[in-house]
Length: 76
Image (tube, rainbow, N blue to C red; front, top):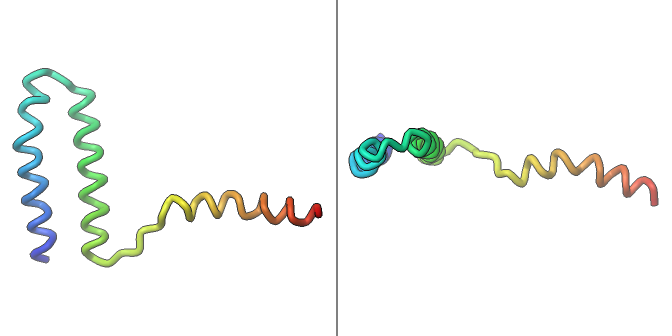
């Protein structure tokens, strides 16, 4: 639990440093992208701390191309 609190403090520090300059320059799209990526990273890090199995993008590629590979192998 302490690791999650430390992570949240780090994220809060990043927000304190980055957000004021983005708001000052009125970069709304960049601010939205910043928060989306920060929340994705925060979620993945919390999942890793809690030992949740996170699938890799390669797993999705294997799921998609496995039937294609089997079909092509059946032709020969």
